[in-house]
Image (cartoon, rainbow, N blue to C red; front, side, top):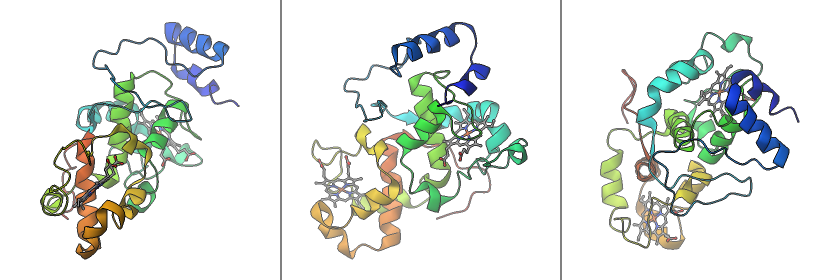
Length: 227
Ligand code: HEC
Ligand code: HEC
């Protein structure tokens, strides 16, 4: 695989050495970059070796970084219409396409960012783990961030059970490996049988809000539509 090749163009000096050291060991281990905010108490390993975040990701914090590092291809609002997009085959995906994004787990977006995908360079470990997850949720939230009114629906339909109690916690890192559509499907039956009378739009709205237990959404772009 030539997956690591593009990384060399983007990485330099010490990072490149670290990367080479990792490839040599055959393990996609993370180099020891400074990780000031990271103290994962219980990191979860996916089969791919990905570690999921255990603290709240912060999409709001990485808006400027996305603008600097990603917007040339992805466009300022993630629509895939940046100035370099016409040169890329396949083009950068439209991150605001909800139907598409609902079927992709954040953990897969994270993987694309770390390993690269198609015309996108591998960002390797240029960002620390925390920032990589922040960027992941920035990307994910372009289509799935909560909208006005979502919190109220969560409060009426979900908060009764999901009030932060030990059972039914919504801040579990393992959720990042699920897609929105999978979680939506899980809202009927089982512990959720009582939601049968709640309309589909309300369930979706409440579910959008429930992800704020895992990440802090960026403020909506100016002119964004309502519910
Ligand atoms: C040189 C252009 C370029 C830059 C810069 C770039 N990307 Fe990409 N990105 C792409 C392309 C092209 C794809 C689509 C690849 C494919 O579909 O095979 C992509 C795909 C993605 C995906 C996967 C989307 C999906 O639907 O699977 C994510 C997430 C992503 N980029 C995030 C980022 C982030 C975050 C940054 C900045 C740190 C970034 N990209 C910088 C070109 C770029
Ligand atoms: C009658 C109580 C009840 C109500 C009401 C309820 N839930 Fe749940 N929910 C549960 C229980 C119990 C679990 C399983 C928790 C566990 O496995 O520890 C769960 C699990 C979940 C999970 C999976 C969490 C994970 O860690 O993977 C999500 C997401 C979820 N609920 C969202 C919602 C949303 C959104 C609503 C409102 C539309 C809602 N729930 C309403 C009881 C409820």
